[in-house]
Image (tube, rainbow, N blue to C red; front, top):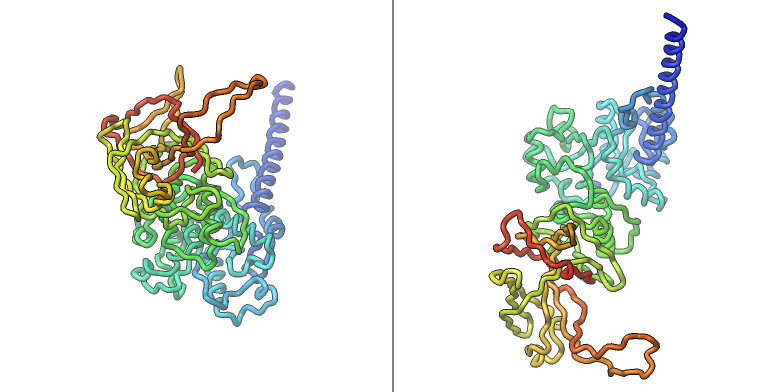
Length: 500
């Protein structure tokens, strides 16, 4: 080997050694960031049943971080078991009970001990239970725990589920675990789950019951939750809102606000925890957070709207999404902005004409037609006649005072070419909107000196703003004259920002 080759080999060794050092530092950085942000605040150390915090976990696993492995993920080092269960009405060991070493006499302590024993059988050194690993007297810790819980279940090495009402596989489908609000995310978030009966016998001999094959357990989960098999392998996000809300509709929570807080992780949004605000306000805030992603499926609900301070486009609860229509939405997003005037949304406004109307004092029945396809008729009944007509019911039936209607399409396409146009598809979805003419105007005045301002004549007719009709939610409209897979191009002037 000549001097030049020797120098090259020395440089190559130097470069590779330094690369390994930099990679080690990178992995350690990833490891430390992961521990401090993506695992529970506090864990139980199974060797002595004592609490440890994140800094203790970091010291324990630091030496296991590999050198020079570009594919390394910290979850390979940091492994813990997590418990999912139905809380007892009383007797669950709390953080204070464990700290004071007074938990053994409590009714729920045996469950905690059995959970920890199963965690040890899985080779775990640490475990987490929501009964005792959160200091609920610390509001900051409670807030972080609730916001982070989906991520903590996702990052666990194994989620151990105790079905306290099940003795055989036949019982599982009717176990109360499937009716609770928080256990929905505890089913969807973990990558590995192991189910145990009331007596802590395993449901199966498999190490992981969340199986990619359609096993008896997976079929039971489908029936018990009404969640399709593929959706049990879940990716969080503010999408397919209408379908995902139905999964929570039959579930109950002890605190009303938890009906909303327990869904934060599933939709990948974050809310400040404020117990005492009430379930309705918490759910409104959840929907507002989901709307920031712009998925129009959030509007696919039925029934009365929530008592929101400015908008009638907010549903009351997850139950509002039950039996919603099957509507098609593509990847396009809507701009949704909550304002003091309501929820501002750009919609393709297609005028509707009234072909038939009957008013009987308690409801208004309408048959509406769309000029885009006169063969399409929309039957609509409103029970909110005070908002549809003025107080004088005789004048209300005259054309002068009739409301004007439109279909506000949400699943239109913005198409940009040589000029911008809107695309309306065969299967459209939209709101029924209404507005009425203003019959009075302030007196007009023509100043002699307009100071350069252009003066125009008094308007002949002015309408109120578009508003949602009383039953809210979307309706499906199919235009048979538009071929499947095609769109009708319409003028972009039909696009209007409305306040719902």
